[in-house]
Image (cartoon, rainbow, N blue to C red; front, side, top):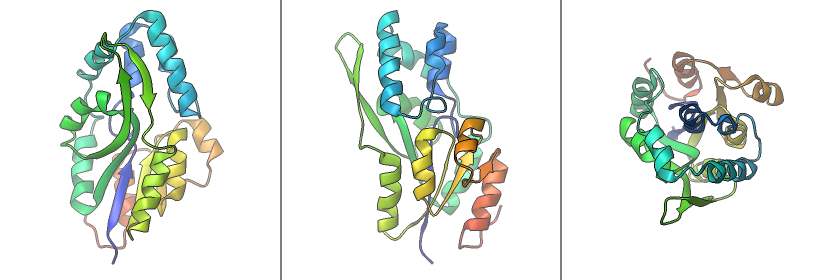
Length: 207
């Protein structure tokens, strides 16, 4: 039997959407847009940085919001079960500059994400993508190392990863993503996702 890896998106799957919380804290409704709404990530980030500049928001303003966030209900316990049964990789389009407080709360799973370019005054000047379509490329690389890869995500930017995986799952996705990717099974709770992982695993897993 080959080793199995479970790849997760981060925001919307294990933790709240960071930018939605920033929008709620600041009252800037334009920041509510996420990868659930905008298919092209570079377009979304260019838009976000323009809005931050218009309102004079710095990295410290966003980190202050993130410091108050907690994993989604049940996420820690579910992730503990997954780590006991699979190798785990978080494949996210967030940034290391944002994610550290959340990784502490999730007991430091392996995280692949991006970096920000931050000026001395705290202005976010740019974003540096690890690799185009890095989620899909990570899945293919793991498969190239003879791993069986399962994956779960909720947004447009996860669909390449989910389609490349040996089995991908949409986790609580918006209806527009469900409609555009009917070939991907949908789960809405951690218990449902656990049941699916038990079903697709080549090993005899206990709930």
